[in-house]
Image (cartoon, rainbow, N blue to C red):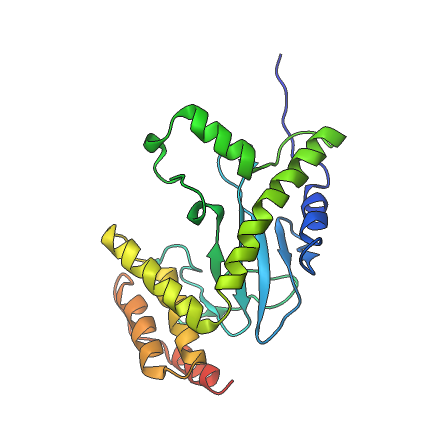
Length: 239
């Protein structure tokens, strides 16, 4: 018998209620994001990230009001569009982004990016324990399972935010990510981009321009930093 799976009714509200046990969050009207009030140019953001399948991981991190995203790639993949320098901000209740994020994978001995390292039973056990079952019913049993999974993530979220508090902390973590990615022969556009703007915030203009220039140099074809972006970097230095 064929069964049609649908998102759990009021899924975002169920998750929001659990996050509110620890954090002062509001739900994003378009769904699957939750955010705290702004404090010192940043807010905490939580995201239920849709992957293939019926269960999703929770990501978390910081959204900064001074970090724009280049419209050409928006933190995903650069494209040879003639729009370089067009910047998009995420700093309202209708525009949310995680500029620097954490996830469960850095806490658990489980390599989700390399499925061959684990058996199907291990994959299933991991997902059942740490991923939210996004598709199902709103039965009391299903709701309680979702809440338990979110609560199981909370200690890792708390630990992450306790360890990574300052811009300098994030710059250190981004530098580690850059080394790790480049060792795997992939270019970490987002890490260079965010690190560049964070360097501007801590008054390292030379470092900021170097990181951002490196990003534009990887465009196809390579291009110089647009004047609007340079102006933005200097404006951040004054914050």
